[in-house]
Length: 556
Image 1 (cartoon, rainbow, N blue to C red):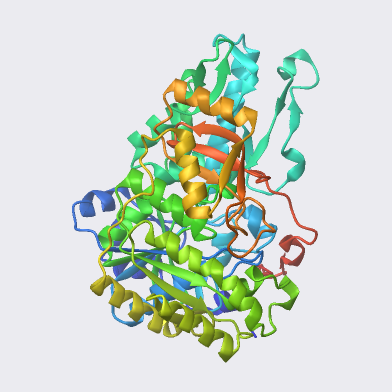
Image 2: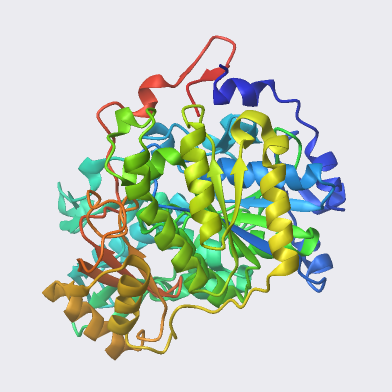
């Protein structure tokens, strides 16, 4: 059996201008990064912005296993299937982070015969967007510390600095550090922290900004610290906005590449790391809706995280109205949620499946709360038995839910035609009545508790004293009417990753609350979620190599 990277390297790619031509994009509206990658110019957007929108399809999933269960693979395969049916479709994905690529997953470009290519480029440096985000983040950090060293005219309290440095790599030893050690000329000694680049507010701003003007306004609103009077100090006060925007000038433009079957794919922006937005940028999604009849996008982790944020944050801010949701499940993940150990997921176990399928049922219920019709698909693995597949199919149909088997990993677009036909039927026969879960004007605790109880199934919400104090402070400062971005582990509906299936009436523990004022949301961190993950015992990096001819192996 060929590996993902072998399949990707054998794919016959078309010049990117030929791929773009499928969407009626001329070469002079592209900014080329070699033969197979390009950015979409501002001129393209200016030309298409007044066209009617196509249909917006969101791909999300149940709570996954640690291995990941194929949400991106399904998204890519569905786009390829639409193309095989003669539909004008585009895929809109987020860019992978180096941290997970070298950490757990080994890559994030889909899998098998449902991948975006060039796969190595995408999983590594791509067009430099993450480098630009990292640089802009750390420029602001450097200018902040320099301001303090040069006399601290803004009266910044060094014990209330909230802006963190970042890097695009999982490195747990950088979570909590001390900077400024050495001579007086080396800066002011203080505690500092690193987060992974995709957790930076810069990433969220890039994903949510409409244009350069909006980007600069958002950058200016970033809170970097508080002064001795407890007042916020903004990035604009540090005079960093112009230089940060200059670093992000090209990164704000969406990227276009292709699948192994030459279907166009817009890949831009990244997840908000462990706060799990996991979607591409607003600009990419909006562009996709203007240049195609169907725009297929995805949101990170389970529907309790990515889909909730897509509906409550991205769609609310951008005025997007999703037309359908594809909910990805796997027999493996359902058995995992039924209590089966990761190493035993290949064996038939109907009892565990019956227990774990409650997780799927909860996610179907959650999607319905946003008023968007749902199609369930099983991403098929070779270990799945006929009895297991039949059980899941019957379960979905009994609940009036459209169901299709997906075999895109093995068969590419052809293996996704059944799913594509179900989605098309849903789009034609069922109307979307999208609405966010809560009103932005509600108090912060009310919004947190709505998400925790309605989406997660919690019975109560408890707040660490520091979290309650932060909420009171944010509401006093005028940030109470922002949407809430919940940071929670992806493996459970609860904040305890070991509590699998469909737990009910559990407590959710809010450890920390802060505002991303530039992005435009309040972050609530639950449990032990980290914004700087660590590497596992055997990182994917151990399996990645390059030979004398420059051929990379080990990415997936």
